[in-house]
Image (cartoon, rainbow, N blue to C red):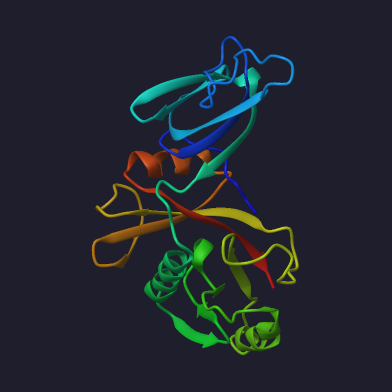
Length: 223
């Protein structure tokens, strides 16, 4: 599963070692840790600042400063709890909004046309989507002289369940309920989205400043 590095404004869970300069443990465990007491803790909240020395995470209106030297793991979360059905709905709407030719084969939504990350893309949006459909998917794209690609949402596809031809490109899908000030697609009335690669830090920062928030992550592969 791809987990993008967090950007200020993201919701995160930070795992860290208990130490004198780290936040107190939420279980009221000794800090610093004593023999036979917990040595690790975590905090979940919104990342409000980050630099080479520290993360600052706001949880319940309280800001917790965590030294980088104490951090053992960081996971980026969607800004709010997102159900798998919502991921399917957003992906289906984005495919439809892209225009061009469309087809649905055994739970996969196929799109031909467009450019950029969303061009010529197949997405498993149905509960029945599996690798069994790949020959028909490849044939559909071959009939259009196109090379098929797939966007595999992390939450919808088990790692390794779909045979792919490359290492893939990690992406994140961000959404907003107000018109953002960066390029985005209005995939349903009053709802906007953009798809970005996780290695484009400049675009990711700009998207969050424009009001977009992480919805889900995935990986684009050649099929």
